[in-house]
Length: 420
Image (cartoon, rainbow, N blue to C red):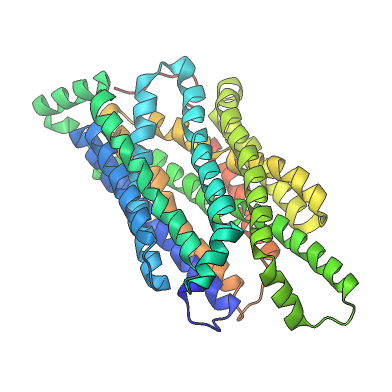
């Protein structure tokens, strides 16, 4: 973002632009999940899966060519259309492919596989964006934004998955049966968004959307800042060492010094992201077995309460880089693990003819509700208000309380077969 705004733009303004961009991503994901989810129920999982992957791969690549912050925000919106749609289709496909006794565990594995993508992003951040040789070459060439643009251009790679999907993936038998039933019975319409808000499904849809909105708001407003808390502590330790060697150093000299080690700091940031992501992946994997043991409600309860406590410890209590580094996997485990529950729980709330539409609407409808919260977070960190990142994350973590209580108003689906 700093390379896409005029020189001299304040950090507060950049935070607002980032918040707008994150919000655009959430709104795009919401629309994509709802629209592609309904399309999946109507034309099939296989075709829709290919379309969503093509969408997010193409526009991630095109993001590399952004020349202004609003262009980048627009591309993130388009990327999110595909990302939201792909989740709706894939979670449904996984749910329809396994029996009840394995469904929760496989759903956790499915959602945890997103960690592999984050690892690839970490590699791009550490060895492309944080590569000193590439950065030096880009600056010598008068194009300092080149490293991050290369990182986004690599987003075209997932499009090659379409070849495998078109050759190997088959439509679930349950979807084919539902499609045949819809042809002979008009009351069993496939992929109707309005049906989600009819009396049999209204309560489940509302609870699902609110639950997902809490997950998205705390992911972008709490979880993702774990690496920043680590980086801020590392940065302060570098500055303290620099001041020890240069007792009369000025703030301007500190800024120049930090700029000279930005590649090193980027690698520390990626380490923080790696630690948080690794813990998050383990949390996602653990959610499925916990669902089978305690049920969906109690699994959501325990992870949300754990997220609340770990956020307070990270942002308000710990201030040593070693302690924070060791705690980040625990923080990631507790603040991300409940997201696997969305892939497990949402498809279980609807019959086959509405499953992808319902799962997509719940998961991605949450993005719409989360978007204003992220705008609020950006405003809180602006110059007008002046809240620190730690204060903002701590305040947003109070949403975990709602997430802990809400599932007890929803139905328990442990051990039940999917509705036909």
